Length: 459
Image 1 (cartoon, rainbow, N blue to C red):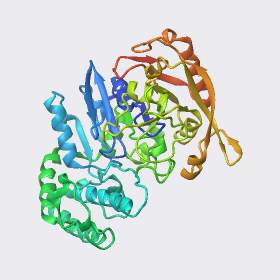
Image 2 (tube, rainbow, N blue to C red):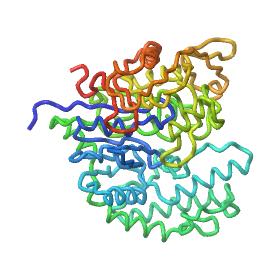
Image 3 (cartoon, rainbow, N blue to C red):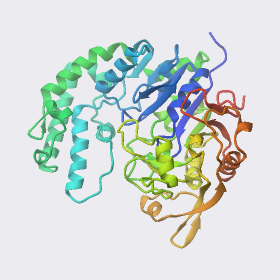
């Protein structure tokens, strides 16, 4: 047994998600023996490009692409077993060994068809009532977290007890069918085709939901585990663990652009609560940030550009960066890099280092604008405010920096970057006070500049 305890790294997004965390988790997993997903659900998406082959993941941790690495879905994740089965089958069809290496916490709340239906009907109802949609993915993430907080969630462990599961499910359906009928008038709204087997006349049906869950229970049973115990044991054995965040800091339910946020905590501190390890086991926090900004869905975005008009910087970012959501296919809104936003992320995550992704997307832009603060209500501030209304009222203050014409695609040495690219990166470091540890110069696993190693930093 090893007498040296493992070293652990947390990877978090520092913007509104879609920063390229999947590639970095996969790349860092070369130094890890376990990868842990600690929050969110299948509303997240990570794209990996390995030897030119693209793989999209939603629930399975990105470390699955490395042989011999154990992957953990921890208690902070809300799990759709149907989507997990679909994802695992796709990976196994591509030759990736999954089920022998995947562990799912028995404490994970379940996402059932009832949650997805409620999610979609609510968005329809908001629109019908003249309100702006929240911009959810319609996958039931929010309603599942609501059940968790209200202490009525069905959890993975309930799948192993059919009578208990049935009783809890009946109670949930009684509640939600009342809400759907009396408050949301669901009988007047369309039912998505994929949910039609579970719904009749705007009401959720018990039998198909229960029967499907029992089939899922048999498939999932061999992977169900006490993940907290297993992670702490792995640490004691000297294994390095990588904690993989989903979405981004500005979608955090407490620290993001509320109410245009997700339903979980996306910040680094939640790696402890969402996985069942002590905060003292989180040794390094790596913040992933694009070299520009993007956002999917509704909500304030101070540095947003016109990104649908050819010939504009925003259109360049959108097209060269292939800015489409991995999970939904929705176009991402694009804008200049916001260093004042990143200061907020650095503060709430306690960032040790930064990873800048998609630097190559900026190749060919003549000049770059870097947001260093805002004007708000007649005063100047240098950090993103907390309220969505205040953020929407912010007027960004920019520094202009020279762009570069040379290609940075595939560069693996910092000194080989154009001087203007280095100037841009060093200005980001200076404003945020966080050193840049890693730079990604294409989606490919090997196109990465390493300035210091998170698993070895500070040792």
